[in-house]
Length: 523
Image (tube, rainbow, N blue to C red; front, side, top):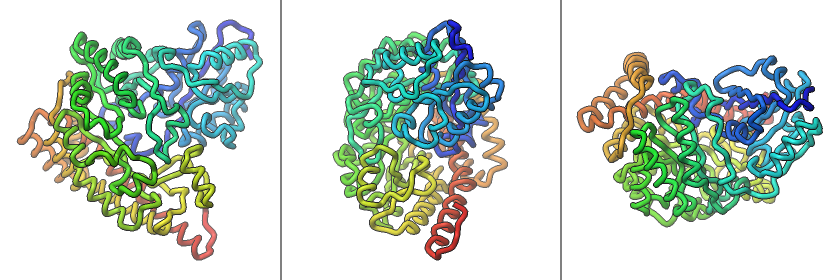
């Protein structure tokens, strides 16, 4: 090992994410990309390491991790969420076989440091790396060759200590979008969510100057297109969000608006016209909101009380009318849910005209209040892998596990039936009053050509595709670009639902049936 050298070689590895609705794996091809989003945590970590160190980045979502990559390094740093735990375990084993120490961090490590999958890592970093004591100790121990098993942040540092991520390390053309994080923390207390556990209840924001610098860093890579603000709740602190938005608007105007943005925010946004206007002026075109359920009983149960204070259908239409498309998150399987919840959710989504409707089964994530409660009640079936689109680890209260699986399968087939999807998408586009635009990139023009060929000629749903496109063209031609983007995303939803999720749910039903009958299963 070469730990006594001043300049260390560090390999930063982002594990491959399993296919999911969030990954858009079936759609990235249209724009010539290999992944939807960048590994923002790793390039942020890279900016915290000594500038003189040699760094390499391997994102396993776009390229293979080779043994020679590992052997090159003095240390390998890996970060991931719970869905990455098996991939992380494999990386640690490969590092150990090649005699290179591995260091693990990220949400999975912070929430489950005793997990078996982490046993192979040489060191664990719990909490946020911006904690100067943690990063300074880690750097010093790496230099001295005295790596410890655990490094734990003593506090949640303010975001003004977070550096500009190393966007220069990315192969930017391999991604559909860039990403920025403005804040951490959420003021709400949803029972199923681990954001408060990981990042606290008090929202912490970067300064406007930091965000301007990050936008400039992305701009200097040559990237032009969409940027995802990855905040769990962009409006957790509205005053801080407004300050950031003013800086974004000024930066955008001074550079002829090279970017458009999308983010996550709670439904309170719909009640603040001035805030919506500022977001649209800054270049935001869409917002993802966790609606979770049409059931007031379920929302009360899970402490999502902010959703009870507003009419969701009216909220969605107001957001679109002011300039923001609305994407929605939904959950089935709350204790209050009976077998009728699937029809109610389907009707709710249709009424709201939400095309991107991410519906999953309720799962208990490690460390959440939900997990603790279900353990006490004896209703936690197994440790989850974080996949809300597979089998839940919760024993439902008002329906059987089979009813939940079959009802969920019915709901997904309804939501991602092409005819119904394009119907919702068209209604949403017509209601949407778009704000300022940016220039269309060359690869977006190429994506349109690919879409016309792949979806308009060779797909099973070509008739619905053309009806959607032609209706948009004649009714609102200025929105045709967004219509193509929606259709391309829909291609992923259709294929992933049909080829992966539905077969997996059918297998889960078969295993459950065999379990009922006392027959052996394969897992």
